[in-house]
Image (cartoon, rainbow, N blue to C red; front, side, top):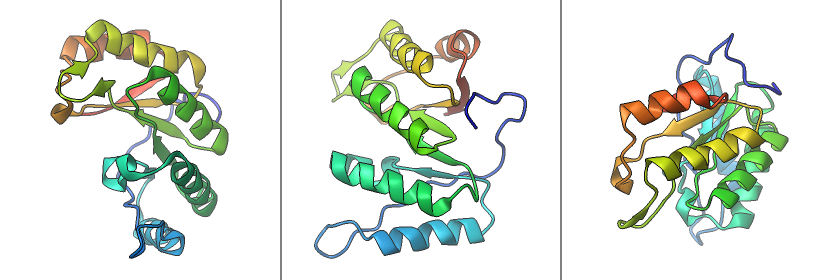
Length: 173
């Protein structure tokens, strides 16, 4: 898929794949492949990688890149893969989204930008963050609400994003 497909929307179960680690805290890549195979074998409709449950905040950029390649190559189009690209920096989130799309992700998922309890974007900043990313990618974007971030995604903001940002097709709220 190279464009945002709104005529055939994704439906069903898209669980988040956990990231297994070895005792020494390095990535357990054979274990990661087993996790992915188990999910596919159980009949999921798609898989989300590099999300909070995937320990995204514990990963170095190198580990993140390794997992992106391993997961997309191993799943090999058996089911669609959503890649979480959240970052408080729009530039970094945009780079991650472009990398995910280039690697074969079918969708990217992003939380609104925030950095700690007191540093977070207002609605205008949140809209601009997603707007810049939507202008750069051609695959669907899922907006993930993250209540613990302290960022409030109002219904009116979500509605505006759905109407005005062409690739914002999904919401995880």
